[in-house]
Image (cartoon, rainbow, N blue to C red; front, side, top):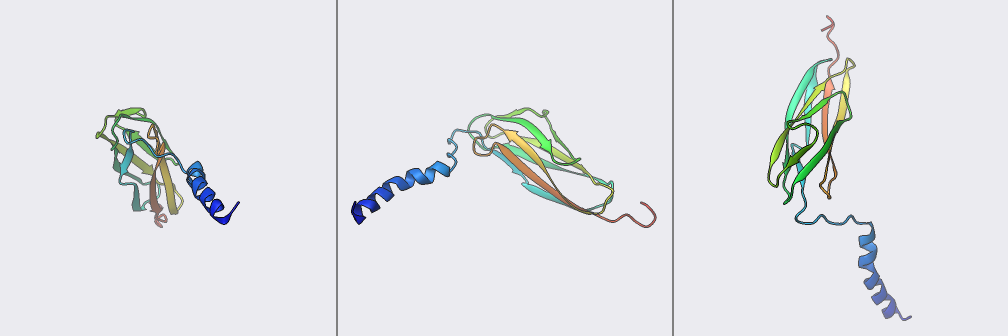
Length: 141
């Protein structure tokens, strides 16, 4: 085969080779999940202190978004207004409340809440939260 023939063959096969590893793009009519804010830093918290933040889950897609589950990686509570399984119409939103109870031990915390849905482009959306647990005061409080 000539050099030109090899070049034409390579250019012909290149799109198929590149698309084999790339995820298929989501159809434009698919549901699309977005969370606002995408992450949150609670700053410095007291040992055993409780902090919470309200996030907003949105469906920016064209069809119903079904949230299958909300799972946390920590002792924090993640609560959807409609329960763990919620259906959001196109353009709709719902609050997600995340409450974190800090441990006794001082130090940096990095936790996450995983939201599983029928969004084909992002079936598992991670919300990251962080905080720094202050050392206990000398008087034990």
